[in-house]
Amino acid sequence: MRVSLAEWVGFVRGHLINPLWVDIAQIDTYAMGRDPDGVGPLTTGYDPDFREPVVLPSASGQGAATVLRREKQMLRIRAQIEIDEADRMRAFAAGNAPLFEMRLIFHFRDLEERGLVDPATGEPLLRVGDRLDAVFSPCGTRLVRRYRNPPGLYFTEVQDQSFGLGGKQRNLLIVRLEPRDRGVAT
Image (cartoon, helix red, strand yellow):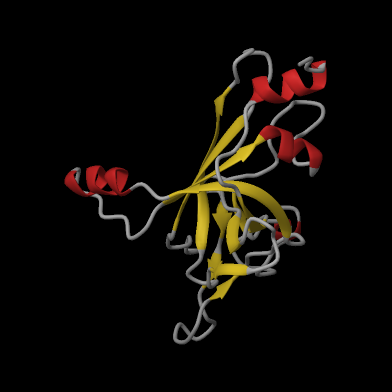
């Protein structure tokens, strides 16, 4: 049996194992860039050091604070989902007690098809601070689980992982998610 070059390249780049469809709410740092408190101490609604939206305390000091988070339009993409209890147990033994951790594994081919790779730099456009909204079945039509916002599950680490068998093209992007407290403006 003859294999075409396109089929061979697809094989070399690999595939996801049992992928599901996920809805991702990307953080919109541009929309949060405006001065949120007028004459107050803040100049932007996004903290670039902590890579998260700031939280404005209520005017009276009592009551609910205002989260300055803005998100782009929801996007749906295929991902492999992993929940690793061993990582959680190691973190707990080291003095950190994460409530929940999940990993999403994206294939660069899927990211490229959705326009989620910067054509100039080749960097993925998924970023720390993006939020997982929902998980859908492999066919993408049946809701498996929706994650409430807040507290939500947020991207806390985004890194390339593998370059496939040929070693010339990136093929996997690993994203760690966990619930986390948001920043507080002082």
